[in-house]
Image 1 (tube, rainbow, N blue to C red):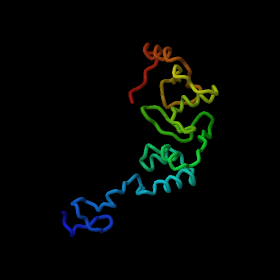
Image 2: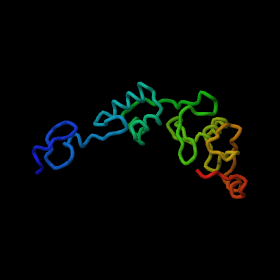
Image 3: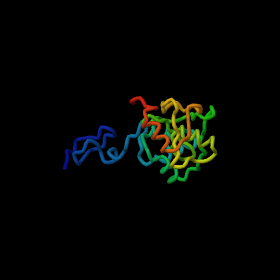
Image 4: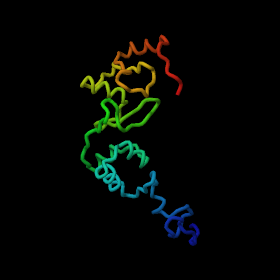
Amino acid sequence: MGNKNKKCPDCGKPIWDGSAKCKSCAHKVERGSYILNGNLKDILHQMYVVQQMPIAHIARELNLTSIFYHIKRFGFPKRQGKWAKTPGIASEGWVHNGYRFVQYNDREIQEHRLIIEQELGRPLTNKEVVHHIDCNPLNNSRDNLQLMSKGAHSTLHDTGKCRRKSR
């Protein structure tokens, strides 16, 4: 048994097993600026339903990647994807591997693909690629995007006509 006189630094309860915190404090998981200890439903309700925060912001704030899972699990109403104030440009998003991603209708999608999908009025097939004419993957203005087949896109890059700068 541990020292009876040792106290938890968070709550002051005695610690018996030699750990740094008491059992209840050890189970609390710190997530961003929130402490999640059984009240994730309340926190998500406040952020997602009441404040209407974008999913990407909630995920970043709580340091969680399973936001959609929890929203569905708790039975929160679905929201329609919020699209741009400026046509063709998303108002919220993040950059991963050099490309800008956005949340749209419960899916994460590369912004340049979404812009072309909206223009065509249909989802892109897995054989279609959106090429950045100036080879800058963050320049998603419509006049810089070109729809092409995977083969044509590979040929374009293999011939050296378009080289991405190292990230």
